[in-house]
Image (cartoon, rainbow, N blue to C red):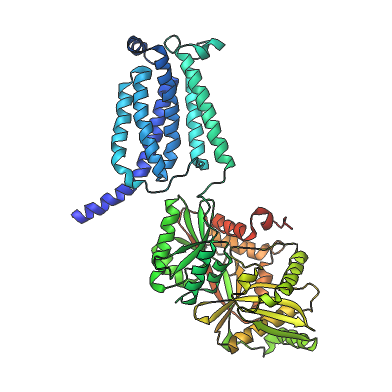
Length: 545
């Protein structure tokens, strides 16, 4: 029984920030209500005998600011911000003093002191880092604005019989309480406007993490060399465009980027199997400490059990075309197009070869010429995050397949190798627009044969986005909309065409997933992935050249 009580107490303790957030908002509203409505005249007269009138006015003004501050800080308390805890304590105790100074409001002062006394021992519940000037989320901003507007309306209603004149701004509270309301209303309006502008114009979310330092990239490279498990995508960490989170031993890591309040991990942890779940929890807790939400993108079925243990929601986002190289062949009626492409390319003088790690620097200029021609032809730009880019140091770390025609380099693709060298993934693929028809078919076919000859069991041709999602009556909305986009939005992006192209190589289709807390809208998380990959809205919409 004591054990159960302790666990129930622990669960209740987890709700402490939310309870104090509600209390802070209500107490802040109570102070503002008192500030914009008339005080009892007998209390003001009693107070006037003990202190100067300007002190009463100062207390009234300070109480207005304190009330607003408690409204504002309630959002930080809800998010468990450490700074909000200290600010709330200060505001509660200060508000108690100002409640006495502005009108001998003992009951309100007692409530504020009681709230501060209850909040004081709960410091450990507010364990998230503070952010100076953190913008409010839309919901909190609307609540704050609604509270202030309601108080201003109530004040105008309470003093509707008093005609306005400019002298009211400078009249002491003991002479006309309406003057206190005018000053309080002005400061509340200015503060609300300032918070609104700040919240609407400032990008939300945790402070930027990354990119990784050269030292961290080198640590990741060493971890990959001795990793027990590492999907091919893990080598994207060597681009240095993502932040890296290492396990205490340094043998495992996770690559991620922060966009807004979503912390997006690219693929799965690489390193030791025994450290994988703990690293996932560490990442989730790190995101939570900044008020963010962990998102895991492009994860495979083997990680689903761990993600389910963490209580995350998961949705399928596409399928990866994985070719079993030991059974790959160009024989048979279904492979006629591949045989034709290979025969034509060889007849026209195309030669396939693979540059091993360390050999890329010698052909860097040729690779760059092909890449620039390809980008200009497609009116695009280099990608990042979930895709590689033309970086000589990055390409020099992995095998690069190239095709030459009569001595001229016309196409290339780099291969990301998984742990143990048993799985490879095609990453960056480029070809010259004036190259021979079918050159990519020829290169991919030769890559599959090369993998088979060198002991690579599986060749990943990359993901077909939204492939495999089904529009059924009982399917989740995410899946139904995804299936609709896959089938009907080919004018925007060739979803079906991409899957059809990869199907000609006879792949096994492996599902890929995205996972996030149940409170995180997965479509928005997927949009963040697209924006990270395309370097923002201009890249995503094809407006950047």
